[in-house]
Image 1 (cartoon, rainbow, N blue to C red):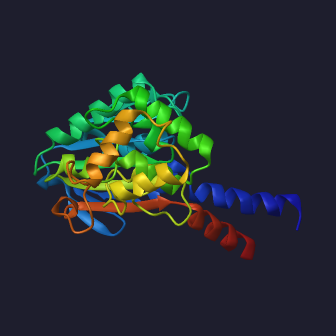
Image 2: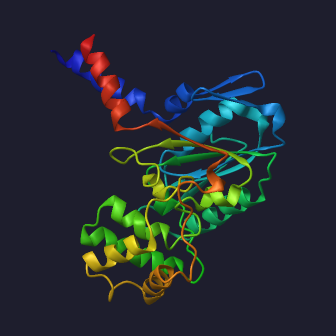
Length: 287
């Protein structure tokens, strides 16, 4: 096998998970019908289309969605990593640069805007969310009583101690106002289409960007176990420790779980992941 053949295989894998191309493969428009992974939505039934989300691949994903829907998009807001922008940028969707892997004020203000847009959506609206790797840090909206500084310290401690992405996100979801299915809860009863570019092995919906539109399989008790496992109870900001403790005691509501009505009008679609890239490489290699 020569270099040209090897590069063809590599490029096939990269094309398969290119953010914009991944959107175009899954999302099609035929007149007033929007077809997403085989499911059809009649755009005439919706008063407005709102686009929100966060992640390092957010800019090209937003550009592709705007290319497909054009003036049907009423408004939108997507948080991306600083420097991860396109020129020209989408015109109907605001691309907001924010901090990653450490959350910053720009990410916080953007996350507030994302939640505001989701919360104002009504039953006759269509909300399209764009989620990709880095979404957790890029949509940092602390739960009541938790500060952005608390979240920064928590992120740094979790990265330093060697916790897995699943463990990190179990804690993140329980100190957030947006993660762990809470974005879907805010948008309910609007129809939600969540287009997800995965950076997690196996692509569990509740783990990618801490699953803002997916049922949360973790609990406050799981978050507490992470603190215990890595001996973080004394180092973690007291407000976080207290919140997790109160959650275990039933004083704070859990994140939405499988079977919750807020997910009845949500379609979560993995548009790209490691498996899709590997499959594309395999097919090119066979040629």
